[in-house]
Amino acid sequence: PCPEGYVALGMARLDLHSHGEAANINDLECTDDGCRAWCHHSNCGLRSMCGKTFHKDELHMTPGTVIKSPPNQWGPYSTCPSGHKVVGLARLDMISGEHNANVNDFDCNDYGCRAWCHNTECWVVARCARPPGLAA
Image (cartoon, rainbow, N blue to C red; front, side, top):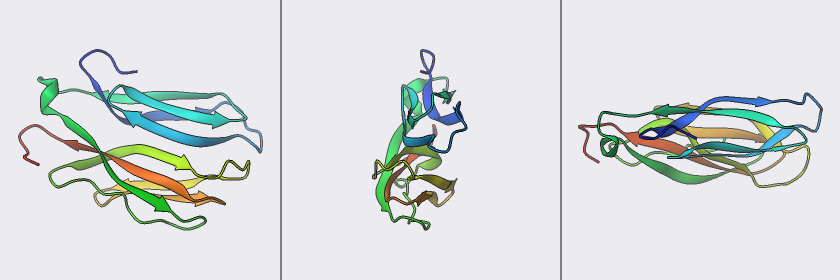
């Protein structure tokens, strides 16, 4: 979790402790309080990237659009509302519970966030911020 007065901007680090073939990440989520992951066949370590302004209420965080990404290819971008900027992933969730379903890659940039999920569809949601002084 983030310290008092801070909000989670996204993940700073995610580490699967097992190197076994079945080890994977089923779900990632970042909210204002912090980030968490559901890891299969492995323990995992996660650290949130936390931030604040002088007045916490001025940093407005919100999720982007919810995208269902197809398997084995890049899906469309989850985009942010007007006036917000992408700061990372709010959610990446593998729809299949199969052991060979996993995240091959994800990309967050000025357009939004998208994912390439191996052998499964997945839900992708960008984490969006409106910095102080910008109107939505």
